[in-house]
Image 1 (tube, rainbow over the protein chains, first blue to last red):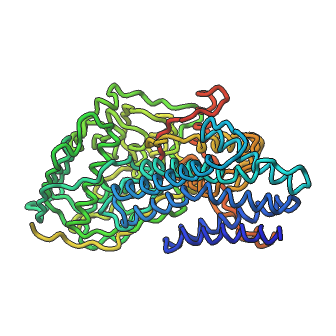
Image 2: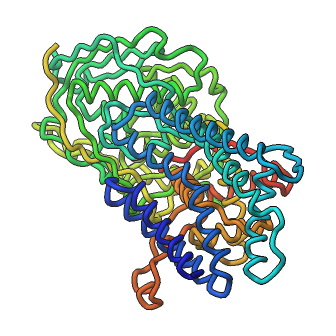
Image 3: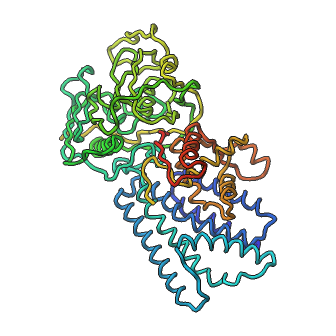
Length: 456
Length: 120
């Protein structure tokens, strides 16, 4: 009987895992299922000498308590796949949480009206914590032949209600706060990559968009500015530049971005007007940037019909780390709160000043900015593993790029010689930083579909 | 409890601290069940962290660059006739987070620790 219970518990966990991972992308689905399977196996191995009833109950509790997080995780995945909007996720979370809380309160109320010995209910959390342990311990004691817990049966509804209430309360914030910024633009988009981006409260769209083939095809006329109010002002920009801003991918060919069409370099003039108060003053810089990324993703989806697939892949990368002697980074004189969002101004925050060999010259950048910038010319993706926060001013000489984009048609290759410049490793060492090769899981973007934009 | 971007919730902080302790004892890699058990031991609780809560937290930590994971060599579980384990390793950033947590709370796990997410 007891081993039957244990098997039932294990099957319930498997069934639930199967259910909430149903129709997910195969990679995510199998990873979660295998991981739970491994966990169950380890647990059963540990519990081999214990009483099956207690162990089975333990598994049931782990299953029940974790359900809100399982659902929250699934909702996140659905959200990033474009099935929900940010608002609907928040609404679903609140509804689910509210339903659970109401159900739990009803159960508590029903339980309170039953005749029983007086029990001080100091607080739901306290009861939950205390009774959870007592329940498990009491159960184990019973199975070991110990005395029967006097109030065990009567406390079960309260325990269940406590679990449901905690689950419900935990679900509301988990879903609303952990939900990634949803790009209506991204039919397929994975949560983990979004976690690296700042959260976005609301997905906004440009009010007016004008996209035309560029009047000038000269790349020297290329510029792209994101103004403090959110407006986008771009001349002779290829779609790749928009992708770079929207998804933080390198502009040069990279294993992190594939599937670009043959016309990716065609230049466009783009004017887009953001709605009033799209970027309210006082927002943190990361939030501003997140909102801008959302709007540009939406522009790409609406006008270029962009569909991007995002996968997490483990590959060899450069980890940007602090050297053993410590960093020599100089704090920026600009505080984050004083940063102005204007990507067209080299002197503004989070921008590098161009120069031969891509010197690391900037007035106020953080380590994420640095990793993203150098990744444009490194032979491996770069991930920030410095654990250093804040804005820094940097000024270095140029360095020999590890890779360069293919030369534009008609231009001979190798017109620029970087042989006299030091390597990136040398330049970084002066800042007290270094690159270490290691395996890491990074988001890899594949353009599934993209079209030339329709005329205005 | 509302999560702000880049902040660790107590469970995530506890995982980092626990992983850092394991590292000090020479255990560099751990799997989900193992860390759940260690967390339970550390808190003197029999009830482990729930499946959904644990693996969601591990996923978030990995996305923030505080943990890295990989599946163990397929030959090992085949030899031992068990499912493969997903092994997690605390990164340098994760160790820093654990140190921050210890310093902030003087050995006690803080309610919240602010961390800037590291791009995956």
